[in-house]
Length: 451
Ligand SMILES: [Zn+2]
Image 1 (tube, rainbow, N blue to C red):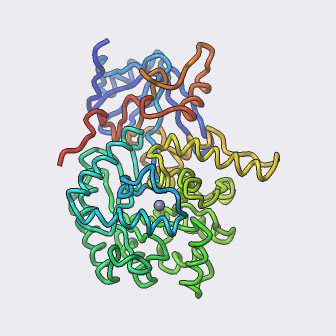
Image 2 (image 1 turned 60 degrees about the vertical axis):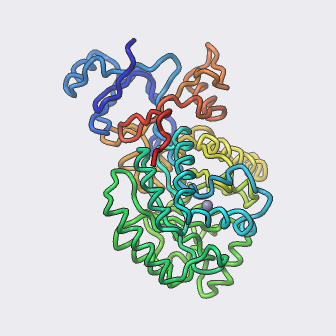
């Protein structure tokens, strides 16, 4: 077979695995999916009508790619919460709880990004790494430094990844070496947003990013809320990650009914708001989040690694709140959403052991949907990505369970469900043989970004 050509218009024949709102795991064997101008133009059974469909879409025979035995296609992974700037600390410094961890490890590394060369080098490394791990869309925290955050946008754009990127705001309860004055913090954010919009990136959008209520005064958060409304921007922040943090927010904002109410008063809760963690939200707070249609990023690796707590995702599902997965580098030590899927299962299993047999934990199908369509819904992008619905952008991964050096052993009697489960529990970047974003093959070996 000649080397497949992923040109602007092509089709793929094989097994497709994706989710819908009703069904967390849909398997379509012996199907063909067509891509034209970055979008999915058809998805149908390989039957007698296929030739006509290919002709209708001007897809030549040499542009039809056939997946190999046991390979399958999944939607690209969505990482709803990742601190690109904390990547140098990935896999170290996990001996402190959140508030002291920020002071001891996190703020010092984020302060280094004032050096643009350091920023370029580090951001290139993290973008390369997460794309190899199948993250086609990411919601990035950068740092308080505007120019370095703009550099991150450039690097993401050049790499071809889909993303929302935020310049972090911090004007209180922060160390002198890593803190902004309130007016400057707002002005720099305006400059960041205007500059990103002016650059007209195809897939990169600016995001309003107050770090969390502890490090931002109400005046600043209100101005940021207004800025988000004016430009219809995404908002990302942290909420109810640890008990100490919740207690401190209560002391800092005694007038507010709850942590969530602080963000509500600031006008930061919208359909485009991503709230990371949410472990200690009350029922009332979840109802408010549901009313505002904001989403929650579940970051199980981080929650276990810095011992923040266990989020009961089932509570959020019962309240019809969108929940996606986040790596939360570097509170989480893994840059992989595949790791987030299985750690979400471990967390849910732990809750199930505490609750007893009447509790049904998340299974591999649930976390697969959270990693794809769920994440897209959290980012309010489920109308353009998240599954293989015709009309959506083609963000996808070719999964190869039998790749060289793969740690997955596939047996003859393994069904497609068995292979998917094995991938969820054992898969890593070696099993991701192609990464597509908006129909473009990101050619993994060429991801390293030149400045
Ligand atoms: Zn975080």
